[in-house]
Length: 271
Ligand SMILES: Nc1ncnc2c1ncn2[C@@H]1O[C@H](COP(=O)(O)OP(=O)(O)OP(=O)(O)O)[C@@H](O)[C@H]1O
Ligand SMILES: [Mg+2]
Image 1: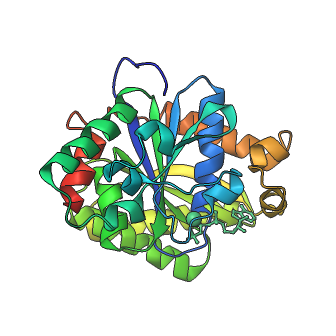
Image 2 (image 1 turned 90 degrees about the horizontal axis):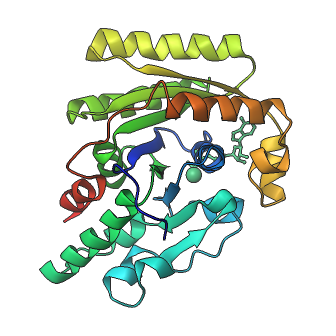
Image 3 (image 1 turned 180 degrees about the vertical axis):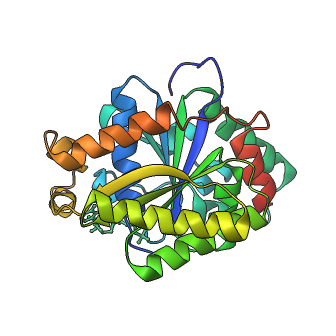
């Protein structure tokens, strides 16, 4: 595990209402871009039932948090090291399968997971799609939730539904929107404006602009190569956009990490 950092990592949850809009692709590439600028990054795959982070990152994710809580594995053994030294950990279905853990196990879970936050600069959570209790729990505990949409009407409606659930549950962090698979920057900007206008009008909430990623076939070709696009096509436009997104999220959109601790909130939510 990495050495201790000065302050706990800030936590970014990447989520969406509709499935298949690009959360995992964005999470994986963002993690690599942030790590390339000397940040210690932990990537949590909170969607291991359907998640394909292990495929993109070419790792074998046989063990998750449940094996750690049961005492079968240590935290070090459930962490996989990915490109640029990012640490990848499988979480959510592990948590959901742990309905009746003892007070001792709960304590172990918290102490071990808290080490992750104290020893890194950024934690990125790749959630499943939709407003299930598990997804919402991860987002509410994060410092910053990045909602992914595409220009499709159903994706936009579902992105708004996710924003609404976060606001109704009194999410204290920042909400940003990224428009993926746009035909052009102009189309993406229009989609951002539409969603943000409705959120301001009906929820009285500001949704920050995380930017636009255009549709690019290199993303799917990269998956076939079992490599994230920023490594498979380092000189492409989509890589430049992802690098810019990482810079924006690390600086301008960065927020102070919550003092209570991300994993404490997650554990409180689940147990
Ligand atoms: N900008 C893009 N241009 C072209 N293809 C893309 C783009 N972003 C994502 N894709 C492709 O869309 C598909 C779905 O992406 P991904 O798995 O990242 O979505 P997801 O939101 O994580 O899905 P799920 O909800 O199932 O977890 C993948 O095949 C991916 O390569
Ligand atoms: Mg996914």
